[in-house]
Length: 353
Image (cartoon, rainbow, N blue to C red; front, side):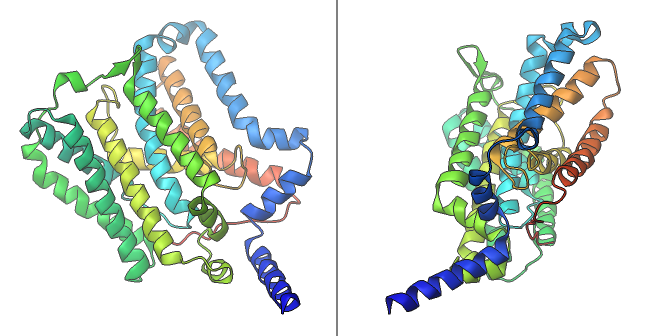
């Protein structure tokens, strides 16, 4: 009986390994291989680029004064706090092989609704934050129910439809939008904007969830591959529901950052934020854990793109340089990943369109 059980378990593991050829296999190979110049470049190249770009714009005479000024730094960090949290919201469905195109509209709705709460309830910020998280979670769970339990399998179409519905709701309630109190516009602690600490906490929690919990391991093992889910006993429907619910909660957090004025004087539209978040996730997948969506890589990518755009604007270039930088960064990152992994075992995550 024991021999049969062991043989059956080995057969299951072998099938899973043949299906994945992905996160778990790469993890084992990484443990066996000593670090080389190639692997260091693959993992930390984006970090080195970020440091180099920061140093360049900080010492370049024509950009130094504006680039290192405190108002510019606060505006950059504020805008990227929103992008990073939204990138986290986008990353979790992507880990499950799904897209969520509604996260930025969800965040904007949460910001608007919580602003109404602030205006109509005497500036009750705690209530506003709770409402934002609840609204975000409800939107995310509805997306998850439609995709996982009502078999509307195209996550792109479902979440795009949700985004359009949310946009309509925002247009309906916008006349009732009250201006948040000024004391909530730029909160800070020990001189550092509070939204920086909130974003750091979200990133730390996301990293822990992905790397050190069964939920994160199940996401990494499945990667949207339903065959793999069945082979190792992962129940994909509750996992998908929880993934979109988490994306919704993170959208609610991003909404509170918007309410707090973290976006600076020129907040971005939901469409701009969506592409900024998605590109940060995909570019981040070429760093730290190459070939995998990961938290640290996503944060580095978001900061790198923001610093490049901010530095070029400080140089006097057109504000419309941002989409150019984002598009080029995505293509270069993909080319770099393919070029640096020539001869490796091909790996992929099945993204449901």
